[in-house]
Amino acid sequence: MKFVLAPDSFKESMTAKNAALAMEKGIKKVFPDAECVIVPMADGGEGTVESLVSMMDGELIRTEVLGPLGEKVIADYGLVDAGSTAVIEMASASGLELIKPEDRNPLRTTTYGTGQLIKHALDKGVSRILIGIGGSATNDGGAGMLQALGVSFKDRSGEELAFGGGALDQLHSIDVSGIDERLKKVKIDVACDVTNPLVGENGASAIFGPQKGATPEVVVFLDQNLAHFAEMIKQQLNQDIADMEGAGAAGGLGGGLMAFLDARLEKGIELVIEYTGLEERMKGADFVFTGEGSIDGQTLFGKTPYGVASIANQSSIPVIAFAGRIGEGVEALYDNGFTAIVGILNGVTSLEEALDAGEANLAFAAENICRVLKINVDKS
Image 1 (spheres, rainbow, N blue to C red):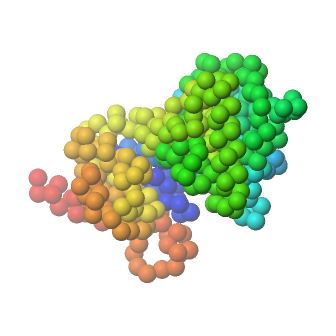
Image 2 (spheres, rainbow, N blue to C red):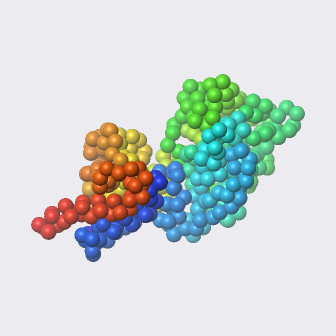
Image 3 (cartoon, helix red, strand yellow):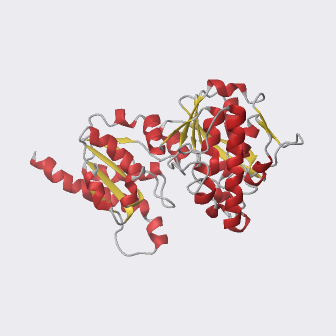
């Protein structure tokens, strides 16, 4: 029998790889000769670098960059495909979790460190870059990232703009002559699961600004600044990103990536499926096991288990999904490629205990499912 094990991480409990290994442990207790194909997955957010580096036998690179408030931080990215592809999580350099809640200020936070990660990857000679842009602390339209890559944004007096979304209203001229020439030869894919435009009531500032520390007054100011940023780009570069789908992702970083780096924005899980070759690895599989910490009705909107199930469904392969928490709306998943959804908790415990026992609970749940499957195998 062939099992494809393609879970996401179970947040704060186990990585995607550890989850897959736990599944394998349970399977082997019932089917010791089974072939288990381990494909750690992610949806472009936290854990994407770790999953792809693990899955594709890559290398984790650690370097010092500027954090979202201009302080020095240590950030990681991955090299896969024999070093030809870089996998970057912008949150590693410019993420919200790098700042204490009381210090969050999208008027000041910058994506400069994300640009430094891209530049570091270029120094390694990559020809392709995958960037996950979830979890940002920023609202600067990607200006900081672009400054790190050689783009100059100047005010009326010819001075370079300060970091942060609060300075964008001062933008007068854009000079791309100094942009890193190597970017012309690099394909950039952006894992992006939001479709928000750059500006307006559904834009970057209005929807995501408050969680980054923006008051209602600051939200209005930031939105006006991004609108000015977009207008300058339109006038000087003939690129109209204000209402572009996905441009508002990561405080406008999505728009900056598209306008200046000709990046392709795609759903995170679709890019990870492409990069890992999941469809090819599923050929000949009898069952697919997937899962993540929580599964509910929102899983249908681009979450890892749904992406995995969609691929399996193309070949009519049964899909078993495991979760620490099963929430409302899961019934809809049964009409969208899921054969069964299994909770892994063995009893009523504290959250801390449940997280600590995650791997053991997942292995036991996988074992129990396999014991049910074995009934039909023995009959045949």
